[in-house]
Picture 1 (spheres, rainbow, N blue to C red):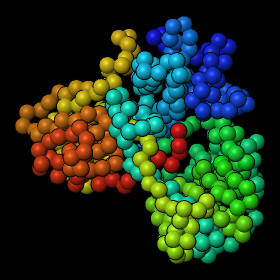
Picture 2 (cartoon, rainbow, N blue to C red; picture 1 turned 45 degrees about the horizontal axis):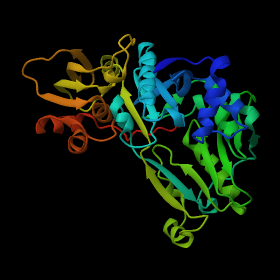
Picture 3 (tube, helix red, strand yellow; picture 1 turned 120 degrees about the vertical axis):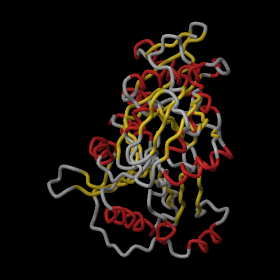
Picture 4 (cartoon, rainbow, N blue to C red; picture 1 turned 120 degrees about the horizontal axis):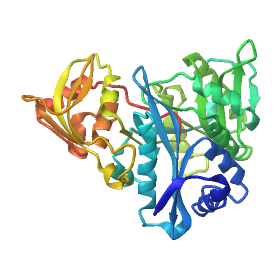
Length: 409
């Protein structure tokens, strides 16, 4: 395999071919793909003289409690039919992460097509995201919002800036390049948005984007909501409620800190009445994203945990090294460390005598550190092991909110 940076003049047609083969774009969506790739770093892989795989990433930030950590999002990994089972996707993804990590990304994330594949690159599964399907007329919100402005695909700059300024919670990701928002809006089927401008008419304060609107009665799918406080959130929900005269079903991702069921009249009755229909109200939970630490020392230095202190020796395994070329600018983070978690956290190379030992893969350790699941639970289901007293201490110190992605990539 030969991998290299994407050259648009040379590689555009083959990249379009691969995305059409795997069903990611239709034949007339090549220009949208080009917009998307313009916001990404793109690596391509050749097999027998022909391009058969590409992997793309984009820079952003990851919210860890009150800290924003430099982040790289792997936004797509695809292999053409003729290149399957040749190791292209894994090696391209590993090299892509190595480039981003060498340039300062402390954490990497991706959306997985199936559980387990990207574990081999050190990724650990994130927490469940909840998708709610509701009858908008069932929303019980005592707010009567003023008339919003209509947003179209041409408003992508305003929309992207609004997303960058949104209220964030632990686990939220933000992608910096406006080309990604533009491409997502252009991919929308009959997409539209509603929102509000500030008094000066310069910035979009809060909005939602509906990426799919099927016919007069729906279903509609809200791709994202952006707001800076919870009154704005309720105002956006009231706009969605106002669609309920004609729209029978709207699907949306449940925001952090909010339980949408609190705002629905008779949710169980609606579920019984609509079961197995086109407009079935539902609640689906799915863990579809994964993350991994790329720089342990710097991630620990930015970790502030006021609930206690625990120190331990860490034996960290990182399988990504097997997929990297010998000259890769970053080699993973496997090794022996001394770690302290608390109000002043840190990680240092080497072990300190007298401390308990935690053994973990980078994916399992990342899940624990990020608050996806406690150490005691990961010791049962993932590659993490240590003395029972140490696991209990880790559970007590890592009292984190459940992380929520909030920006699909």
